[in-house]
Length: 545
Image (tube, rainbow, N blue to C red; front, side, top):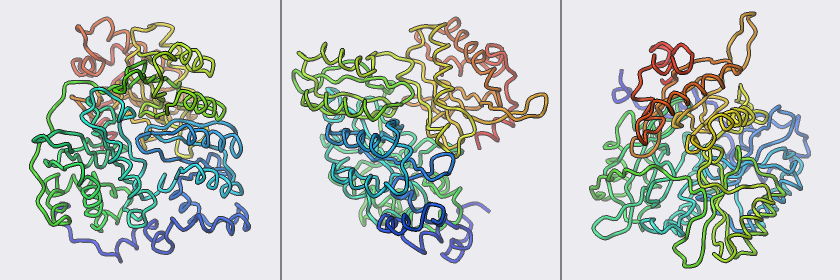
């Protein structure tokens, strides 16, 4: 029976099959913040697991191991931070955590080691700075991503800042959009090279000019995790004034279809698009809106997505933006506070990027040299092309309970070895490493992607290993990668990657990227370079399913 033929689900079936839906019906998760005093009084050990799950709606996950500390995900629409907001986040890290933080691929900042008893103080500190964590996790609209240089870039089609702000004000913490079937991801941008990865979001509004009007094409059904999909064009043009209405209608059409609440595994918008296609989604959205949307097809662009690293002039005369690589996305509370002081002194602000870096914006040209020296003193060297600036690793070990392998430390060691051998000639290579199938580091679309797993040694003992993904990419030739090599032991990973990169550098055609090179070679050819036996076709199909 196909999805189109199966009978519609009802709430009885949903509540029978899906324990998280029962949890949400019993008590609205957003209300859990008001219960913090009672939870603290009861003691961490006595907090019901259902309430631990509800804390996710305020951006909280267990740190690993589960001994009473939490990770907190702070939402930053399009990664935009005033100096005061960045300072507040750094202060929270220092006062209530252990002085560390990380920049995440959804342009959030994540903090660790926060104790249950201190959470009211944490929230009060962030509230005072106008910062929210509502919907940082849970079945909600997650952080809205966008171009970090919106409002600054010379080549943007138009400034999306007002639309991003309007959407964030409407969706963040809105009870009407806090009981969705699963997490839900928007991206909104008019970036000339689509740096914000619209292809892998549930709904992406992609800037376009149509008949002289500013607005958006709409892509639907993207997402990664263990079942990756690239978003598909819904075939419509939406004037920017109607953008939030269309986001709400599309989300509601999905959320109200109970078929996508029965199973958590199938509770993402991408599965609805699999079933009814973007055309079917358009019909439902138009029914919700009560009007027909304009026909429009998003034009192809032949430009690779940028990372915004290095020094670039802004559209504001006399001002510069400085894209700063942050190795492995790790940043301390002290660094956040010092950067906020620098941005405030310069009259600028800070933007977090999808590649786990940050942009210092609004730097006067006369202050450039002094600012670069100050950034270096803080611990950040500015490079326009940087293997470290392009590399992405998920939270993973030691914090994440889903991770089965080292992530940031393992990628850091690999980068150091590759830099020693190949130097700057691989500066634009994109390495993306995840510790589990959830794909927070987006390994499916890296030049070389890695997913943590385990393998048994000759003695039968389990040890850390990685699947190696190739042929993935974003941009004009966006594609989901394939796991070509399975369960590569960690101590064999460096040699395999070195072999692949050396083969690319020696055998590439003029200007040929690694993904294009990997697509030109067959599996056996890549296997010869890596010194590994490619996974059988069936294994790859199962891993990609």
